[in-house]
Image 1 (tube, rainbow, N blue to C red):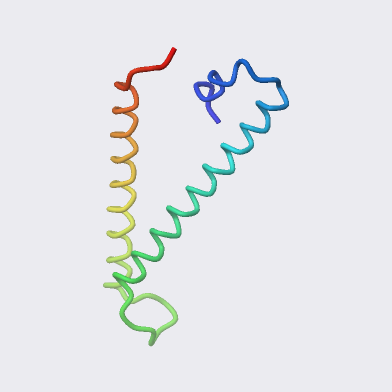
Image 2: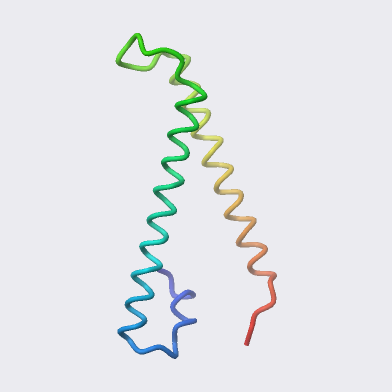
Length: 93
């Protein structure tokens, strides 16, 4: 967890800060796993056509690579846009 998140917890006792940090880390891990699972499922469904071989065919492999690249670029762009909007949001003091 980064320092900016911890700054909002200044008034809490150390034990509560540690619990909050742990909860936030768990949520971030869960979200990362969901994103990964979504990527795998989407690209598999879109790209894999046959199960006649134990490895991917060349066109399937190319499709999976393109799909994963697009998914990750989109996810990064959404994250950047969210950060931009978050910076421009009014703060509560």
